Image (tube, rainbow, N blue to C red; front, top):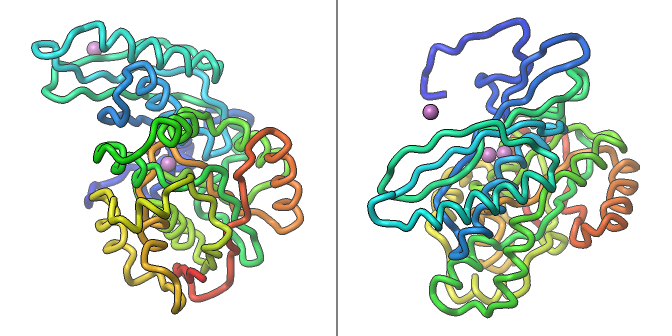
Length: 319
Ligand code: CO
Ligand code: CO
Ligand code: CO
């Protein structure tokens, strides 16, 4: 990372050398801690809802590793000179509500004055050292399951432009605030090879990392990828967030789109997600079982969106 002289340690199971969703450090043969930090600027107007989404997003990296978050610390940047402190109070209440739902205990925090409001968490979780799920375990023959629909970036852009109706936005907000805990527990139950959560790089950006780290190829079936209502319509109108272009550029050499696919598809598959779902790589039989359990647990849109192939390694073909 940035050419830093990285330190290795015998107890460090997942560090910065192969960037993953969180760091993992072995304490004993039975127990490892997972550590991660995430904070960002508001993506919705309502402070309490923003607090909930920020916490769901920060905890997601622990769930992506297959772990259980235990404790957290608030990270706050607040423009105290220009913004009423009651806004911060509402954000923190929303955050606490989400932590309570996740059975995570808030143990502290730190705030600094900043011109721009930001909120998130530093999180510590636990996992058995032998059960750590990384991005690098995907195997040829695996199926890929995505647990939440795509389109939060596009819908947010439409919202800013005054084009998204309240019910469209409310639905997306509910998903952004939804924990990835159930999907994480269920994938561990059925047996999983690799996992990551879909955030700023979009589905293809994060899938690309998994393909690279696992030294495998992937096929994504665009028709099977779940998207929020009206996402296609807004994407066709050109309501594309700035991050999409960077995401596309970064992956231009490793993602190939089959001929005849509509242009908007690329914008959706590279759409930067806020607190998106998990992308789970697992054997075909396990995938069938996981999908049934996810649907039973109310994760209605979870779908098999692709498969892992032997080659070309590190590349994704979208059909
Ligand atoms: Co992540
Ligand atoms: Co993250
Ligand atoms: Co301090």
